[in-house]
Image 1: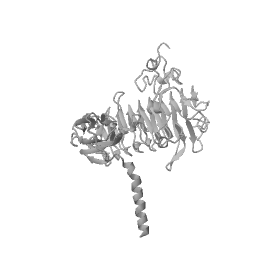
Image 2: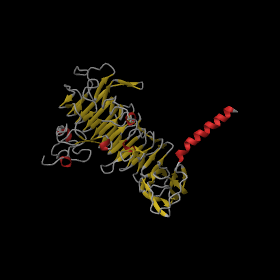
Image 3: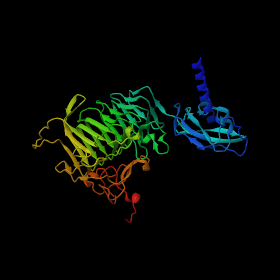
Image 4: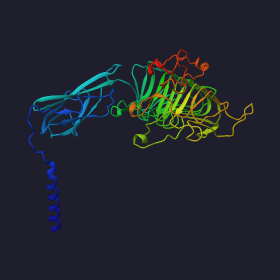
Length: 512
């Protein structure tokens, strides 16, 4: 009995000690008609919401900045959920809440979601509603708005089994996978956008012709349209938002023109094939910001021009065996958004920008020799210092087998850098012709970081940027305009090495 009495005494003492912390809960609510609530925003705006697919949750704050507690007579969702909005006030779900108390100088959360019904149109439709607050007979409101977009939903694994054309009338929302079957030809119209859900992938057995334009590119990106850091870092600039694109061994004759692929995990992978048939031709495109390797090809024929390959947690380009030609391309790796870095850790990239691998085996196949790897008027750059990692900075060249003697008695496989900018230790010999070996980062317009809201722009921003006016004019004649349509042949400081021509009028005083 004594032990029981002692326990009750201790509990009673603890409860008495806690009572002061509740001071104010029983205070009378103010009836002062001049008192108002304050809100963290007057408009809670959602990014585009795909019809039938619920939004992420957004929130705003209610503040009582007055010296007395208030009773909010009603918190009302004006449309009563008919518009698709839903709210949660201080942990409770509903569309109407009565007599909600808020202490002086206190606050509470209002969480909001929205699901948009199909509108039957191709363009986004504005959806609006309001949360209405009544205090002492005075009404205040916070506006809710979202754009609803009808989509072509590809869910559960979709396989295209006959020759088809995908139009740009509505975007495509891809869950799981989109597969082009063997022997099937798919054409994608200019302006088409593919929103890829988490881990979604595009798998090509047949062939894919994606022909966009400068003004209406074809885009593959993640389906998150909101921000991971408010007003600073959108998910669309964050790697690892979806899977990647795989061209299977039996896929040939693929063509990309003005295609943008960004923010996936595995980037583009061309499976082991045969280099005597074109695997893919890429022009005027951008492949960027991948959570792993950006572009990997094994024993394929790949041709690329006027294209940017940039930013990966792995390598930007790994070419193992096969035949490759790159002209006026920019290859750069200044990745700053790996998952570990976003968690606050300092991380050094462990891959070079470019790997050329001759006579290597891949997944038990091979060894695959490199028949040709030629780079004309290309930039190969990254965050490594030249020669800091290994002996060659941003370029790794290796052979997995003894090299086969050439007809001229040499043993090196056929790789060549002609009029290129290379961040690497200076080398001489037939493999390097009129090459600019650099030690420092060239002067680009934007190289990530908070000041640039993690955006990158690898266009040269100064006439003194490495490569400006240094391109091989004979090569440039075959590619007279850059990725953005700038005429290289008439540029006052050109032609410039890389995918982008320097334009003085946009960046400098013409009198300088």
